[in-house]
Amino acid sequence: MNTSTDDSTNRFEDYEALQKQRETFVASLSHDLKNPTLAQIRAIELILKGRFGKILPEQREIMEMLLDSCRYMNAMLGNVLATYRTEKGNINLASEKVSIADLAIECTDEMVYLAKDKEIKITIKNSAEKEYVWGDTVQLRRVIMNLLSNSIKYAYSNTELKISVYNEQNYTCFCFENRSPYLPQNKQEKIFARYISFSKTHNGIGLGLYASKKIVEAHNGIMFVQSFEDERNIFGFKIPNDESYKNKKRIVTF
Image: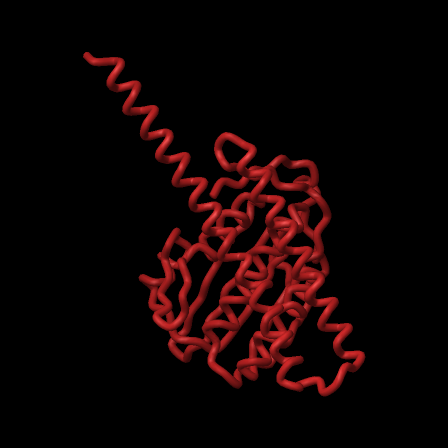
């Protein structure tokens, strides 16, 4: 029995797995940073096209939106640095009181110009009596941004995007419903897998939903998708809103 060779093989496999984990994380983060950056670009383009006329008060609103995007990107970059300082690329999630409804509004405001570009009407319905969960604000915001980006990207032009925040038993839930191509069951089962993208018209690398699922599951939550043949699609997540999760330590590994 060649114990030395076996040990070397195991160490090499561990190293390969670690490198793949880190590469996945960086690629996933790069994917996420495209969303706020694209929102900034679209907003500036609208100004340059004269959508708002001359220098008017509306510009302040746009600049505030850009500032929010920059802050979001800064927080995400902080996660990159923190992750690379660890040995295995894990992120220790914060445990703070987070309003899913507030996050939904903030993210929608940031993506509104992407929707306007496709003439998509966005509506938000908040029926949650318990809209708060205990978790990591930056990472949950990341999930909602991913979902909204996809919902707008794949939705048909001149349609409505319905966003809902609600309670289901001991969960606080977020979901969107849009009009987009039907996803058969076999694709629904694979859509949250790493590097899976069914788009033929968008240059995606298939990491946004994968990362979102990891984050939600680290919050003891569930990601879900429903697709109907009349081309209604629903994506969302549910996270426990029980206060017993207040001091729970969570780690997400990409």
